[in-house]
View 1 (cartoon, rainbow, N blue to C red):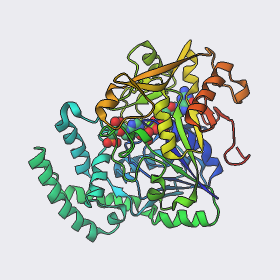
View 2 (tube, rainbow, N blue to C red):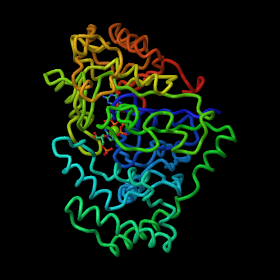
View 3 (cartoon, rainbow, N blue to C red):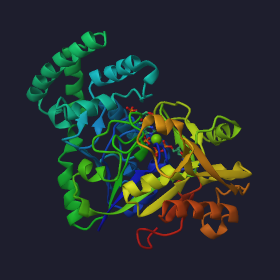
View 4 (cartoon, rainbow, N blue to C red):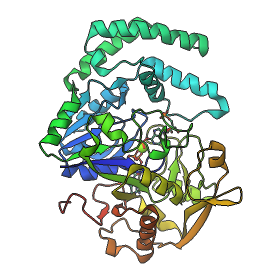
Length: 438
Ligand code: GDP
Ligand code: IMO
Ligand code: MG
C-alpha cells in the first residue's frame, strides 16, 4: 500500500491536524516527520477539542501506531505534558513511538531563540519562541542531542558538558545573556529520558515493516510550504530539516520516495500567516477583520494555536497556491474553512501579481520583490448562506461550487475533500482517495 503525505500549501495552520484526524481512520500508522513544538494542530472530534504540538493527530483512533519520526525536534516538557493531558482526557497513548534519532530541544535553544529575535530587532522573524529553530540549526551544526542519548546517562553527560560549555560562551559573549547551569539541566533531562524511555525506539524500522506488510501509512506534515527553508519566503521561514515540503517526509520518517504515492495539499479557502514576512494578499480592512474573527465564540477564530497571536488574513493567493502545488507534486487538495467565506457578498482570488508594472505569475526569489508585488484579483460572487451542515458537493450553493472549481483550476489538482467546520464529520468528500472506504 502506498504512503500518503499531508502537507500544508500555505504559511501553516491550514487545518492539517483536522485533515489527518479525518483520514487516519483509513490508515494503520500515522507519523509526524518534521518541525517541533512550533507546530500547533487542532483536532475536534468525539473526545473533545485538542491542540497538539508533537503527538500525531492519529492518536485519537486508539489502535494506530503513532510515530514521532527522526525529523522532529522534541521539546520534552511539551511532549510530556501533551502525553499527560491526553491520558487525563481518556486518550490511549500506548501506541505512541518516538524515534531514537529525533533531536531534543535543550534549554539553550529556547534561550537563544529569544535572544536572537531580540538581536534582529526590527528584522525579527516572529518565531514561536519554542527553541525549535535553534535546535534545527544545531542539528546541522552537528551539535545536537538526540532522544536516544537521553537513555544513556554516560553518553548524555559527556555531550551535555561539551555542548553547554560552547553554548554558554555563545549566550554570554555573543548575546550578553545569563549562562545555564549544567547540573540542573542534567538532572532534568535524565528525568525526561526516564519518562519517555518506554516510547523511544528505532521508528524507521517500524514504519518500513508496516510498509512491507502493505499497511496504509499517513505522514503528517507541519507548517506549510511557504515557511520552508528552500521554497518559502526566506528568511521569514522556519528552520526545519528535513524540509516542510512533501519531499521531506521520506527523510524525516525513514521511507524511500517510492513508498509515497499520494500527496494531499491542505489549503485554507483564503490566506493566513503568523509572524513576520511578506504576504501579498494581506488585508488591513474590515474584510481582514471578518476573516480573523469568524468563529470567535467557537474558538476557531484566526489566532495562533501555539502562541495565541492574531493571524494576518487575506484573500486566497492563487499564485502562491499553484507554486506550492507544483513543488509538492500534489495528487489531491483538501480545502478547509470554506464555511468562513459564507459571510461575504463578493470573494476575491489573486491570480497574478504586478511587479514594477509587469505581470508575474510566480513568487519572485527576492525578498524585496516579494514585498513589492501587488495582487491582481478576480472577483467572484459569494453565497451568503451557512454551509456547515452540507455533506455533499451537489448540496453546496452554486457560487460555493464555482469557487471550489476555480481553485481546482488554478491549482491543476482535484479538490478531493472540502472542510466546512472544525469537527471530524464536517467534511465533503468529493473523491475518496482511499478507494471507496470513507
Ligand atoms: P494546522 O496547524 O494546519 O493543523 O491548523 P491549526 O489547527 O493551527 O488551525 C486550523 C484552525 O481551523 C483550527 O482552529 C481548526 O479547529 C479550525 N478548522 C479546521 N477546519 C475547519 C473548517 O473547515 N472550518 C472552520 N470554521 N474551522 C476549521
Ligand atoms: P503548523 O504546523 C504557522 C512560523 C512562525 C514564524 C516562523 C518561524 O501549526 O502549521 P519558528 O518558531 O518555527 O522558528 O518560527 O514560522 N511558524 C508557523 N506558523 N503554523 C505553524 O505550524 C508554524 N510553525 C512555525 O510563526 O513566522
Ligand atoms: Mg497550526
